[in-house]
Image (cartoon, rainbow, N blue to C red; front, side, top):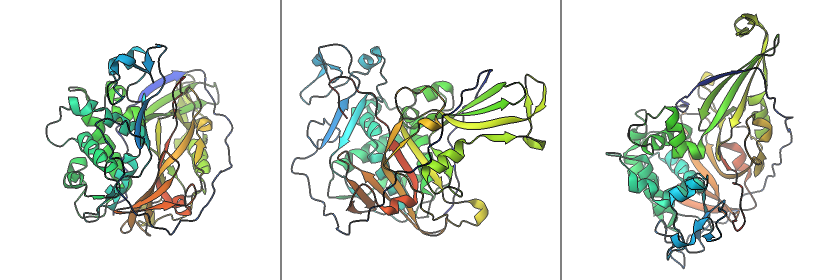
Length: 430
């Protein structure tokens, strides 16, 4: 199994300013609590009330809600009362735009039950675990549920976003059953030419390539996938996308140069970190450029000077995906198997330098784990949390509940999925 890390397409914007904004103090405490796994096996049973899936969500098991309602008194949860049909839910995207809200992030889904298990079709545990984590990503599912993409899809041939929409729809309506993700497995090479069927693949590499494929599929015709307009229009970047800022400050004249890059996930070194907070602190620690190739050519001083370079999150995404780098090329594929502690929530405020509105307290809802000793073998499975706070472990076609908030095995995760809520207006709820 190869440990190739593929980053998202880069959009670089150079900005030079005289003022530098500094990060706040870092927190070093981790709120992690280890609780044992329950040995009790979950037996899935069909729901007493059938889920309507993507054809209207009026039951209590799967709901979709609109956040940030406008001031119009005739609105029901932010939607004009005239637009609410028999199912109790209908959204007009133009109406949302009029009130300054992004239609992608204005909807919210709740998962009261766990969906289907996934059949392993031959070394497809990497694919199954990624699909399960995406299936419980609320803003993504809410958008897919709106049917907006399906109604306007212009992709000839395989469309990754349509495939995900069909899969999520089936999975959430199939509690107690086992599904075979045939469409996504048979079109594996449409996601990346580097993938081969029936071969061990890297889950992080698959997730990044899947998100990139979905990004390209959701763009309007004629919009290049790496253009600034693409990042503004992309469903994927609206949900998962953020921006990093690399700032270099001249220690002689205090001149600052900023470079901004988009990201779909943060890859963190864990060689010198035993907690997520420590890994984030190391990621954003200022670096002194003080000699040789590490000297900085100041554009104001017109000479090489000592400088401080710092990488921070400038725009935090709505859904934050963190990749813990357990595999390193120079160590012959050996895995860093240490536990990395983290709590059920984390405040990203100390690591963000931009002017993000509101607080940035993220809640963990998915963890993808690799069991094994190297990049060449092993097995992937995942943990997901429903809206009721119940954790489940999903291992291909097997599923079981986790006693407490999360299991100690989660602390050996390779991918963490976190989400923070939008501000709620009157009459709205999470």
